[in-house]
Length: 437
Ligand SMILES: Nc1ncnc2c1ncn2[C@@H]1O[C@H](COP(=O)(O)OP(=O)(O)O)[C@@H](O)[C@H]1O
Ligand SMILES: [Mg+2]
Image (cartoon, rainbow, N blue to C red; front, side, top):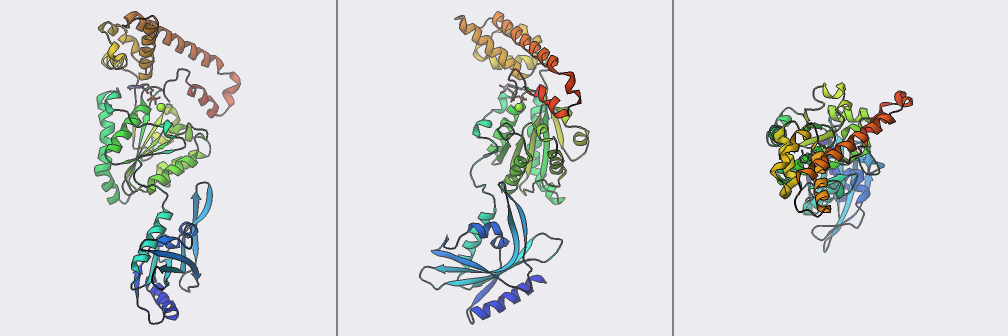
């Protein structure tokens, strides 16, 4: 077996350099030969136990053919995992300097895992372990406990997971099913995926017109996830860089490196499904490039344009595990609940009269109508919001929406019909009423 040849070689080197000195032969971690670690950890670096790393030297080893993998770190391409043989030098305060002879190699062409061995002075295992630890940390992207939310592309202002579950007003069944799906996945599903030797990655989509509460629901799900000790990774497409696959890639790296279960939120995923990026997103959904976090990763994606999630995605099993349609207001009781919520202490029974007008509107409409009515009343120095103010507010909002729709319809010029879908889709995206977001 390959490791025996590595050990034999290392012993030979040891006997030449340190004849007669007692040593131990140990399995070593492959991160010590990773170029990310080697570039980052400088000679002189202090280690636990008053020890110091004093540099390294590559050794020629007939058993190992040096070879590196490569990948992106930030925007730069760098060498990463490397097979090779090295001598690492150390010193400990009050003791003699010493060396560790190290070799890492692939021993099975079909397994992309490196095997590494080291020969360590019998009394210096502590220092070697400290060095391995530092290497491992250098290699893993920095996700350290305990930030609960990682925002990719944007600042904390983009996403605030403080929404209470009860403040999201949607049919109870729908909310329960969504929350149950997440719980079942993290508590039972992850093990099942692992038994089947699948990366535990589940993908849910929230689809609905703007302003129905998808973003809000994501925030409430995030709060729920955090309360169970999970990490949230949130990808924002609304900063200056827009929606690029590079962001998704960074998010997936964070998910893989998290060492905790992760809720991954990708808002307006349709924006990434354009041009060249589409094929790459499909790879992620298909599992070719999907993250492998052994603790489990649940992706919660949203879209205002379900038609963009075309046959290739929606009808192909495995690409999305479930699609939840987030509806506009469908019945009187839902409308009443929403209206009471946003009228809050200004609620009066007479407001019930407008309930039928709220059917088929998104939650954001009700919020706007209620806020506007309260402002109208305050402007007139009224302490109570009468039905009249509420009706007035709803009428003006409806007028505004109609005008906006006419505007958009009139602007859809003949000349654009041959343009790629992309630019047509941009039109309704700019929602003139500030719903959604
Ligand atoms: N189902 C709902 N329950 C409570 N408030 C809602 C709901 N839907 C929308 N709203 C209100 O409208 C705002 C915009 O909704 P948002 O979650 O951004 O919609 P979407 O992401 O679906 O476009 C929310 O911040 C909230 O104030
Ligand atoms: Mg939204």
